[in-house]
Amino acid sequence: MRITLAKHSGFCMGVRTAIVRIIREINSSHDDVYMYGPLIHNPQTVELLQKRGLKTIDSPASAGKKQVAVRTHGIPLEESRLLRQCAERVINLTCPRVAKVQSIIKKYSAQGYYTIITGDTDHAEVVGLKSYAQAGVSVISDIREVPSIPQAKQYLVVSQTTFDREGFDKITAELRMCCDSITVFDTICDSTSLRQNDVLAGIVSGNDTLVVVGGKNSANTKRLARIGTDNNVKTFHIETGDELTEDGFSDSRSVLVTAGTSTPGWIINNVLDKLYAIKFKKSNIFLKSALIFLQYIMRTNLLSAAAAFFMSLIALAYSGIGDGFLFPTISFLYIFSMYSINNYFEKSFLKLSNPDKYLIYEKYGIPLLTASIISMLASIYLARECNPATIAVIITSYLTGFIYSTKPARIFIEKINVGFVKKMYYSKIVTCLGWIIVTVMVPMLASSVEIQSLVSLSAWVFTVIFLRTVLLDLIAYQGDLIMGRETLPLWLGADKVWIAANIISAAGILVYGYVTIALNNLYFLPFIVTILYFLAFMYIIKNLNYIIPLKYELLVDMNFIIMALLYLYL
Image 1 (cartoon, one colour):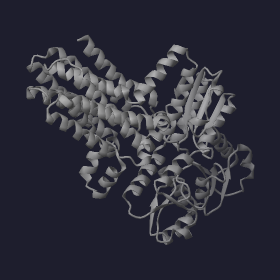
Image 2 (cartoon, helix red, strand yellow):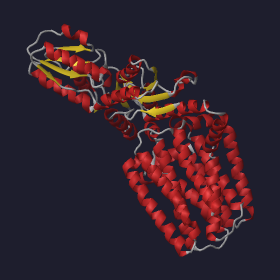
Image 3 (cartoon, helix red, strand yellow):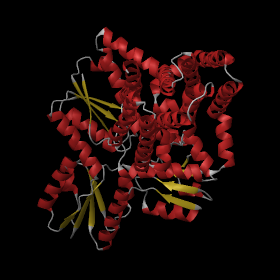
Image 4 (cartoon, helix red, strand yellow):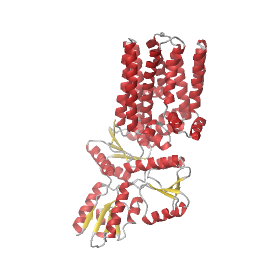
C-alpha cells in the first residue's frame, strides 16, 4: 500500500499566525485570555488550548473587563463594535485574507454595490462578511441560485475564502451572463485552491483511497472530502488517526492523505504514523517483527543507551585508556535511566508529539521507571572501585538529571523567571552536557588522559547529541507549540536553529578534526560522518511540512547504528 501526503496540507498562514499569537498571549499574560467563539474549526486544537487556559465567551456582553481574542473567521461588524466597547483589550486574530474581503465589501457597499457572496450561508466567515454589505447582500452556493439574485444597478461578487474553486468559477460565469454591471474579486484563499488541486491531481494520478484529516464542521475540509466522493474514490473524513482501522484499507493500493487549513501538523503526523502501522501489519511476518523490535528498542530508550555504550568505547580507544566494558556499561545504564525517567514525567507532551511512545509509557511506565532506578543503582555499584571523584560525578549527574526531569524543577524555573536560565533549561543543553560527562569525562577521571583528547571527544559528543536533540524537537514542533513546551526550535525559530546547527557543526568538526590529526588518531576521523549525517538529515527535515514520527525517528537514530558499525569495522 503506497501512502502519499498531499503537498499542501494543514495549517494555512492565517491559522498558523493565530495559533502562535494566542499561545504567546497565554504564556505571557498574567490575566485570563478569552476567545469569542472557537478560534478555528478543529476541536482537538481548541480543546488543547482550553486546557492551556484559554476560555470562551459567546457574546460581547460577557467581555467586560476581559482581554478577548477575535476568531480567525472574523465576526459581524456590530459585534466587533460592541466587543471593543465592553472588553478591556481586543486581540484581533481575524485571518488577513478574511479581513481583506471585509474591506472590499465595505468599500464597494458604500458606493451602492449589491454584494453577492459565494459560500455557505451559516458559515462563521460568511456571517461576518454579510454584516459589511450595507447596500444589500445575497449568499449563494450553487449555480441554480443565481436567478434568485434581486435586481440592482451594480453588483460586487466576492467569495468565502474557503469556497471551492470549481463552484466559484461556474457561479461567476453565470452571473456575468445575467448581470450587466458586475465587479468580481476572486477572494478564495490560495491555500484552499492548492489543497483542492492536490486532491484532484492525486485522483487523476491513480490514488484509490483518500484520507481527509480535519474538523467535521470545517467547511474547507468537508469540501476536500466531497471531491473524493464526487469522483467515486473511497474517502475517509477523520479528525484523528484513532478513527482509522485496518479493515478500512484491506483493498487499498494507493492512499492520498490531505488535511484542512485548520488541522495541526501533529494530528497529520499521527494519522500518517497510523497508516504506516496499518501498512506494515499487512507486511510479511519478518518485516513486521523487525519493525516492532526497532520501535520498542528506540522508544524504550535502549537504542540511545546502546549509543552511549559505543560512544564510551570510542572515547576509551581514542584516548588510549583501553577497551574495557566497565565505563561503557555505566554509560548505557545512565542514559537508559535518565531518558526513561524524563519520558515518564513528560507523558503529557508525548501524547501529542509521539503517541506510540506515549502508549508504551502509559502501559509499561511503572516497570520502565523501576528498571531505571535499578539501572541507576547498578551503575553506582559498578563504579564502587573507581576513585571518589568519579563516583561523586556519577552520583551528582544522576541527581541533576533526576531533578531536571521533575515538575517541581519546571515550576522553580518558571518562578525565578530568568530568561537565560529558562532558555538553557528548555533548550536541553544540559542533556548534551550529561552525555559528555558520562561517555567522556567519567572514563577519563579514572585515568590520566591528555586534555586535548578530552576537548576533542567532548566537541564530538556535544555536536552529535545537540543535532539529534534539535532534530527530535523539530519532529515534535507543532505538538510542542500547542502544549506550550519550550524547545530550541520554538525559541529561535526553524531558520535560526538551522544557522545555529551549521555553526555548532562546523565548530565541532573543526575541533575534533584538528585535534584528531594532531594526535595522529587518523583512524577516528571517519566518526565525523555522524555529524554530517545529522546535518544532512536536518536539511531534509527543514524542507518538509509534515513528518511521519516513526519513520523519521528511525532514520534519526540510524546514525547511532552507523556509529556502532564504524567502531566495529575500525
